[in-house]
Length: 259
Image (cartoon, rainbow, N blue to C red; front, top):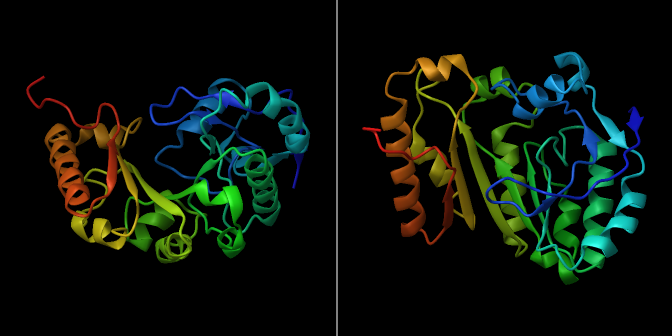
């Protein structure tokens, strides 16, 4: 796998539900086609030129050294560190990425900094064998469907949904807090699916984040998008309240239909 060197790693996020973040890989082999917001931004900035280049990830080779320098600088300001917003820390079938992610999580935990982690891959079982401060970590998966044909079209190189859920449930059983990002959730002109069935498959988690599909012309063509996302947001809230699950509805997802 190719490598790059960066001047900094930790940064304060502007995402509504995040704190400090890091991205220790440039690009992502998953190649999501919603489209991928991270790819769009990197291409606009000229960091990557093509989709094919984006799908050939490059590891930040000095990531651990940067953490050694930056943890003392930011430690008193950090509530937690999120992995990741512009790449995937447990990229499916990318062992080099996963190995570095484990080392980063361990280094942060040794400094009594908890992590939140989000993936469309599979969590390594060894995460469940950690103890000490790592029990404060929160592990999440992205899940917007249970249909494998949909996944293969829009998340072509990710892990299958069943294995993704199973790896999260394993960490739940080991006592870790778990969560699911249901974003970007597709409109019915992409796929018609049983929303309650998806929610039931993740009823064991501690938190659900729900958000609409943006930056896609086909989604914009769906005439009843406001009503659709309002209704599903209400379903998420009711389901979470019934099952004592925390929830967060992303900004702009649940809006006034008449506005």
